[in-house]
Amino acid sequence: MSTTEIRRAEPVTTVLTWQVRPGRERQFEEWTRGITRCARQFPGNEGVSWLTPEDGHRYHAVLRWSDRHRLAAWLESEERAHWHRRIEDIATEVSSERQSTTGMETWFSLPGTTVQAPPRWKMVLTTFLGAYPFTLLIQWLVTPHTTGWPLPLRAAVFPLVLLPVLTYLVMPRLSRLLRLWLYPRDGD
Image (cartoon, rainbow, N blue to C red; front, side, top):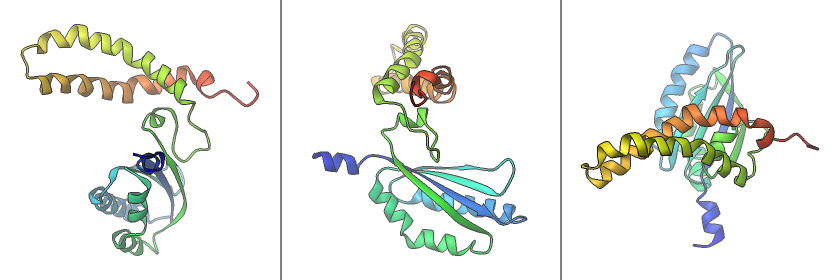
């Protein structure tokens, strides 16, 4: 596989920002559920998350796609156009931002911001610092109890335990703790 083909296959995260007319939030939120179901059925979609405002009328959709070509197919699809026509008088799409990711960046950066993900070597080291203690605990506490299980089931235990712990508990805290090292200010 050439470098160009590998680059094309990189996952892409897109953030779409919507300005909702005051008083139309409930209709917009109903629409988000429908278009989300539609997008999730589209080839290459790897997830859709909506960020709702605390104040104001801006909503953000974070869409993850397997590659930029499938994202482009969704953005140009008749299905998406149909859903957009349904809310022309309710909301307006005001911006979009796309970025390619290797996967680890989502632990270290927020799509839709100008903050760049740290260098990959820092992400690898930080992930190791977060994963190693839990790998050790799983090997010590869980693995001995699964020795009689079939290999595919035993192998599934490790990521089923480790990945949610890293994603929801460890990496957000670790990236905050190491923020100054991961994201040095200009001139530091």
